[in-house]
Each structure stands twice: as C-alpha cells, then as structure tokens.
Length: 146
Image (cartoon, rainbow, N blue to C red):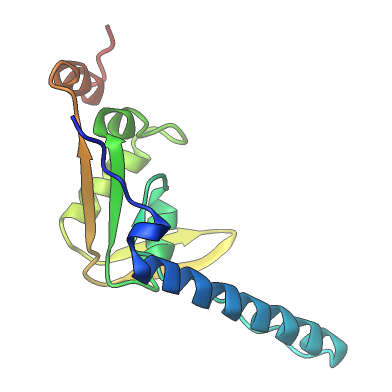
C-alpha cells in the first residue's frame, strides 16, 4: 500500500502560510517588547493557518479550525490513530471525533486557555489500513483486548 505523502515542498499554500506566520511572529515579538517598555497590554500571539496535521489532539484541532476553513488529519496507518484514542483521558478523544463528525458547533473550554468556538467544523481524515488490522481495531474500539 502506498503511503500518503504530504510535505511543505508538495504544497505551496502550506509553505506560504508557514512563511507568513514566521513573519507575523517576528512582528508580534517586536510589538510585545514595545508594549512591555510602555507598560501596555501585550498583543495577542498570531496563529498559523492550518491545512493538515499528522498528529494532534481534539483541543489542538479546535485551535487550528479557528484560523482555517477546515483541516485534514493525514495518517499513514489509521489503526495507530484509532488505537491512540483516549491516551490522555478515557472516552474523550473518541467522543470528540464522533461529535465533530456530526457537524455541530464545537465549544472547547479549558481552564488554561480561552474558549474555542467553531461553527460547522470541517475535519477530513485520510489514511490507510492493513486488512488484517481491521479485526483488532474493532475489538479495541469495543474495549476488548487480545
């Protein structure tokens, strides 16, 4: 099975977004230094426009969707992605992906961050899976382990 290759060199939009973000970060750092000198409120840190990710959490997806019309999760091996659900907290990641699938507004609240509110989230998943892993994957989703 061929792997899915996504890289900066393959996608000019990603390269442009990254370069633009680096410029915005430099300008932001200068503005922060200036604000500190004048005892003023610091400007908000700029965020990069995202198109895809190969490894992320539901919270990070929400943050990416604030600056993007939609994102694609690209995994060469989907079984590893699904088996990695709930590594941080039981039931959380699996449920978050199911809720995103419904297209309903996402509202993510965390004590350490500002509220993230996303209307009509668009999250695509692309990847492959080996046929012999499908049975293990369905068992893992049902909570059964071999």
